[in-house]
Amino acid sequence: QKSSSRCLDRIGAPPSAHDSACTMPAEMKRKRETDEEVVETTSFPKNKIKVLLLEGVSARGIKILQGDGFQVEALKGALTEEELLEKIKGLHILGIRSKTQVSKKVIEAS
Image (cartoon, rainbow, N blue to C red; front, side, top):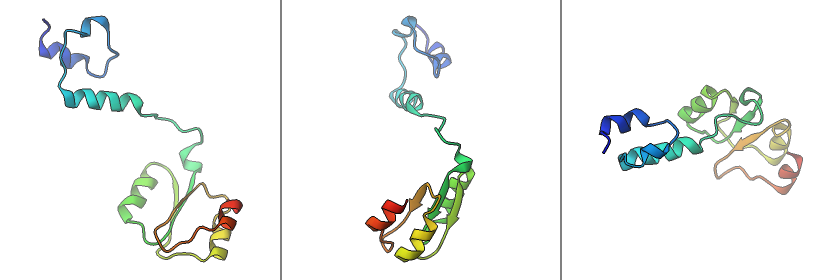
């Protein structure tokens, strides 16, 4: 049987036939499965993706999106349908809370 240090050396490497005797802690298996499912690239450059966040989204959330390279505009309040129709032009992501009403007209204009 292989030693546990040999198992730890293989974490993150593609599984191979000789790994079957190696036991990995369950929490590491879940992380490994999760890491393999993550897609690192987007089909559109993040720095060109425009995000509008309304109604006081947390500063932490805004910083996370900006840190990932998104163009973020954040407003404290809700917008009327007319204001939203103007802001939605060229927008990729709209983040709202409960006060903003996204009408059919706004969706069709996006």
